[in-house]
Length: 242
Image 1 (cartoon, rainbow, N blue to C red):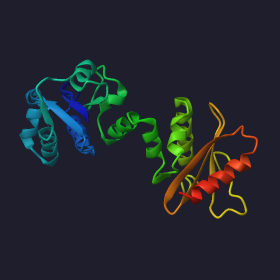
Image 2: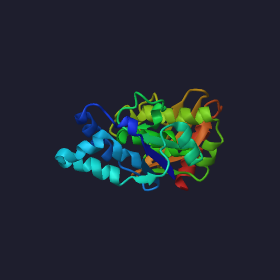
Image 3: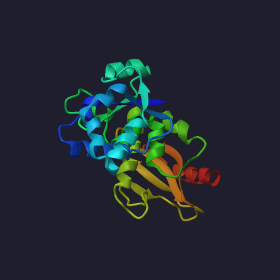
Image 4: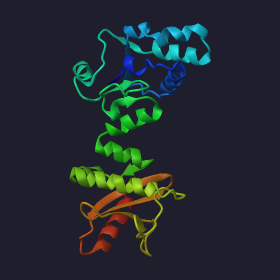
């Protein structure tokens, strides 16, 4: 469970049209069930809140609905210190439109659905970030342990290389190109085997394939292995048992 607090100072804009635009973006956030969006009753004292009822068009109604659906907190949470005290940890965020007058770290400034998704990704565990980046994943039974046994820097590098592969915008996110991803399938193999080629901070090969709508993550091996063909054969054998 994580908490997000509506920051009054970040929605009390001078221009009412910008306030409406910002409230529309906040209302468009696709909130997770296990996240709690909160307000303090002082929001009803804001000038922009009162203006919502002067014309009360469709966008104004959406703004009111957004505010009304927020849970009410007894204490006004308006800084990271008070949020940490309320939550018991650092994993929280603030809802608003313009944070320029507040000292809230950027990742915790939530103004729209993209900010919200970035927040979610930021606070994922590293293994969950890998699962987020690789769609429709399946792990070989030992893959997750192999990944977790690596140093954090190496784990992050593997994720970064998978991201680079996706950014190539090929028909399939992880199609081979001989640079980031190479097809290492041998002539007698029943199934294709690919390798993600990781170079820093250490040289690694992540063996996987894309079959039947799944990205099957099979094994992680050191590039320095003298007999890489054996690693590829083992990866193929493991996939046959997935």
